[in-house]
Length: 181
Image (cartoon, rainbow, N blue to C red; front, side, top):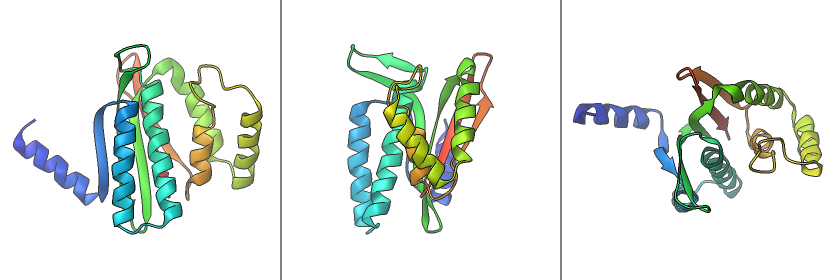
């Protein structure tokens, strides 16, 4: 990357009102440290507590999804690993957006797309009912959590969640998700 390339990247980030942007390997330790910094930034900006909590929740949920599901992982030990992806927080008018992106195996795209399409099409009552149902049942096959993360993001978002899958290569696609508060 040239100095000019980096300046262009910085200018683009600033023009989109990005207050935090990270691209690289994420670990639980990085998520904790960045969460603390984001909390301080939102407090300094006098962001309402309820909004701050939602922004932090969305950041942590999206970052943890990267650490759990990105196929680009480095395992340090049984307990610690790092996974590659991108996450950003910014503002559009008086709203915050939180976005993440990571590669996903093509074989997993169809099921995730179907789940996200269903969730993004639900109203608040349907999301609440689905949440309660998931809390009473076993996690989805292949889930490394409680299978409620996307549901909770949709419930806390002020707009329907946005997502897409872009072809990366013959084995992987690039998954990108956006929520707005």
